[in-house]
Length: 289
Image 1: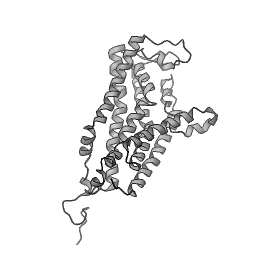
Image 2: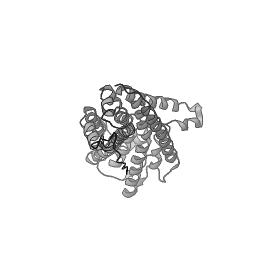
Image 3: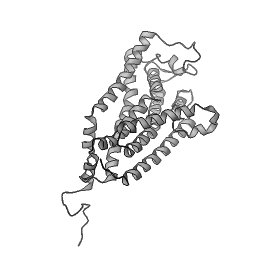
Image 4: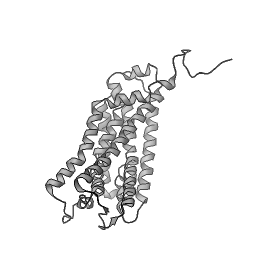
């Protein structure tokens, strides 16, 4: 009678499901300097913004070019949190997510340790899965840590107050406002999936971590530039960054879901395609580093 054990080559000590445990990969990534630098920058930003408001004074809405969220940024902790996300979502969070997801595999190749991991042997699909789980977890933690620290900073510096809506200057009850903020953070997490998946695809394609991270950030910048070309009309809606700030619809007296639903659907679709290409690329890649 033949018993299938899931072990390879008759070696009783080998079990593919036990290779590269998540706790080992988490520990390795948490010990890296770039991880700590990224989180320090994200956690310091709200304090820097609060200091800027304290030094420069409360923003004024007299300038028609001033974004609406800026004019109510100091109204309380909730408004300050929304403003912090507004100034960070387009670039800083993109860099953080691209860093964690674009560096994860390319850094192993850059250190010439990737082939030794595969020789352990760690199955290629499992290696990608473990790397992706850890990278997405750190990226999600980075995205969530920013509004959490902004809320703490806002309470300390500006106090607690009801969320003031920038468009109508109306206020929302605290329960409704907190629900809206959770929706905004959740939408931001989903919208960053396209950046994470693109960076991960580039990470398995190149041996340069800087190339993977910079490539993902660069393509986001290009998408934003193209999105500014209004002559493209509705074709801009297919750009991965077109719906980045669709969460501003949550800062209306009545929630508007249309833009956020389109943005989440587009982001998830792009992410699935990019991750499928990453798996296909890595399975067929000749790893020599």
